[in-house]
Image 1 (cartoon, rainbow over the protein chains, first blue to last red):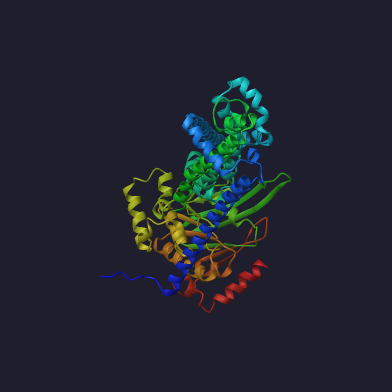
Image 2 (tube, helix red, strand yellow):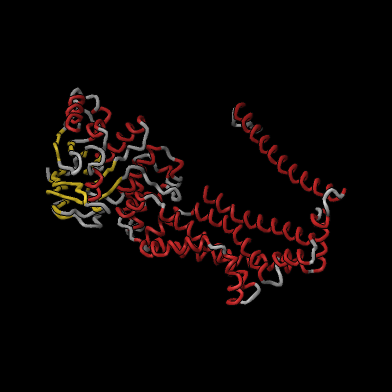
Length: 266
Length: 251
């Protein structure tokens, strides 16, 4: 038997217009990218902009291929990725645990609050030289920088989510004789999951900032090192190629976090 | 009829940075077993404080609160509390919401309690929604779930803190009927806090009128309207007269 659509004509029209809108949005996105790359290539090719300073899409592509053929590219990508992921995991876990501890004790929270504000306002890059002295140069220092950049913001955003939980919900739990641990695990933490996902999304970007900053300061590998190296030897193609790869990696990591949000909303 | 709850000259003061404020000034009233009583009074007079004291969430500054002739304790499982909003946990299914109290009290494997939860869901047309999330339910259904979550713990006394105030008028009338019939058929005693005189009249056997802060009991009004649901009770010829009487007492 032939399947007939179960929706009305108006519904079919609505779905069609939705599909059309989505297609137009994608066309717009792709057009912007193609126009940007095309214009960049054209300006560079005609000499309107100096390819030495501004590079061009074709030169970026060639640089990436050359680096890959030399075998260095994967080392740099892997180093940055490894540092970012480790920093991201440590900062998220520690920030979350610190927020839990501060939620558990109001006195502790009020005592620590001013220091959190100071640490949040402090540009972490200022700690760079000390980190190198304490941890040594290389991946260790980069990971510490990454953790320092992400941990305070995670703690503050998670703590805000914990303490903004509706007081009536806490009273409801208490009226059912819940203890503090049950209130934390069955109400406060699940209630803060949307904020946790937001913190993860922010941390993806922040951990890449930490990694690049750490690699600028002291490293012998990584995309941050490559950018630094490229600018020092005045090879802007290497700088641009590294930035392009960074964009792809950071977006990839962000896309890995977004399914969590979709799963939670189901 | 036997007294289930008794307030004996209960006073309550709360502290602010500026001063000590007297919220309740010698409150005395009692609730018969299986009766429905409403507390009405001016906004901020301490109605919710009375519920919090009854639930053991606050401790009286002086006086006594007796439940079945024994002083109430902090974790008294004879008392169930229903709040202004349903406060269903959106990340839990309806079944997980209903059994939350059992989970907290380590009774999730108690076959009798689990059977009661299932029975209540079936009885009040929610069984087919047991695996749904709260956002998939209407406002009225959510309130029924919130009530069942409280009833599963088999409290002797139900405290209702303006449980219909977040609903629109039409839903409110229907949910009032639902909640009233559930409480009556489960033979529970209920203490309702409301600022809506019609709601208090249509659901209660007795209305306790409180004065402004510091609250005292101004008057107790006993009711006996014709009709077996709040909606039908509103049609009683004496309803308007009682409304007028309580309104005057409040203003």
